[in-house]
Length: 406
Image (cartoon, rainbow, N blue to C red):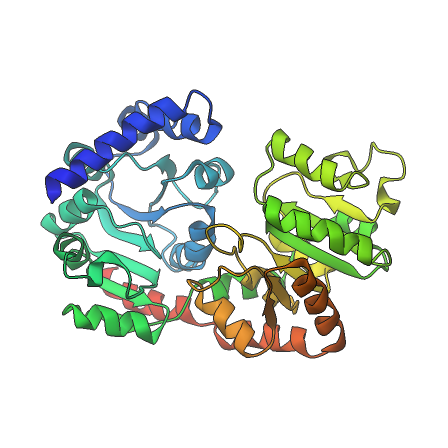
C-alpha cells in the first residue's frame, strides 16, 4: 500500500504542474515550495528546536490559532514554526507575527519529511483537525517527537475504520495524542485500539468567542450599514449567490453584505452580473452613492469574521458544494444562520439546527421561508451565541496537557 501512496504523491505533483499553467492556486502551490529547504535554512536558526504547528488552510489556522497564541503567551521564549498545505492559508497568514517562520509544507515524501524535520528540530508537532501524512508522521514517531492532533473529528465512512484501512490506521498509530471534537470520534478511535484520546471539543469556539468579545471596528462597513437591518452572507459560491439575488429583490428595506469565498475577478464579475447594483468594498469611497446602495460586495480577504458584528441574520455558503463554511463566526455574534443542504460533516451545524439557531435550505422558497422564520424568532440569535459560549474551554484543556512537554 505504501508504494501506491508514494505513487499518488508523485502523480499529484505532476497534475499540479499541468494545472499551474492555468490555475493560480496550483501555481502558488508549486512556486511556494521551490527551494523550500534553502528558504527554511536561511529563515530559521536551525540550531534551535521549534514548536511546529501545521494547518491545511486558513480555516484550520483560525481553528488552531487559540492554542498557538496561548502557548506563546505561556512560553514566550519558545520558537514557533507554522506550515500550510494550501495557498489560501499561506498567502493570507504568511506575515503572522507570532511565528518565527511560516512555510509551505513540502510534499509528503520520505526524503522531504526527513530533511524538513532535520532542519526544524521540532520538540513537538501540533496538527489541527486533519491532514494525515505518512512520512511526516512516521519520521516524527521514529525520532520520538510528540505529535498531537487537536480539534480532530472522525466519521465511520473514513478509510481508517474500514476493513481495507490498515495502512491508514498505521498513520494514526504514529499520533501521540488525539484531542477530538465529539464522542463519536472517541468511540471510533477506541474501536481501532487507540485509547490516547480526550474529548476536548473544538478550539474554534474559543477563537470565535474571543473575536466576538473584542471585534475589529470596520468604519466603512459601519457607514454602509448605518441604521439599516443587515443580512450578511459569508463564504458564498455561485449557487448561493443566485439564491441571494432573489432574496435581495424580495427585501428592498434590508441591506445585504456578501463576502464570497473566492474573490478572483471572474467570480466577482459573475456576482456583479447577478446583482448589478452591488457596490464593491474596495471602491466604496470612490464610487458615487455607493454607501446608499442596498448591496455591498466584500471583494477582499480577512475581514469577514469582523463583518458579522453588523448583521442580524447570516447566510453561510458552501452548502451546495463540498460543504458549508464557518457558521461559528456568525453565531458568536448572536446571528442565527441559514445554510445549504451539505452540512452533515459539521457537528456545529447539526447542533445549531437542533436548537433552532440555524435553518437548512435547498431551494429559494426555503430561503425565503427561513428568512421570515428567523425574523419572527427573536431568541434564535441568543441561542446561537449561548451555544458558542457554552462550548469554550478546549484551548485551556490542550495547554494543560502540553505543559508536560515544556
